Length: 67
Image (tube, rainbow, N blue to C red):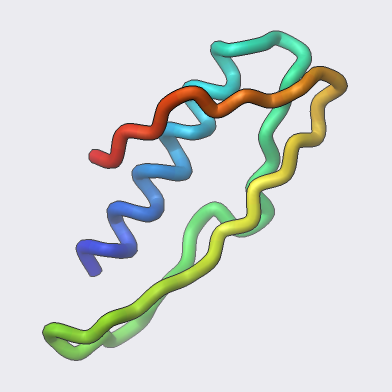
């Protein structure tokens, strides 16, 4: 579950940084959250989040800080 929280935090940080970088660039995340359900302790899990640039300008992600 810690990994899921980390992934969601990264996605939210990307949203914050990309919106302040340019007024014309826009980021779209169709599925911004994912429920892993029950995960046994010490299991390795992963999920892919697709990020789309839907604005008219180039989208630059300059820094990602996981929380």
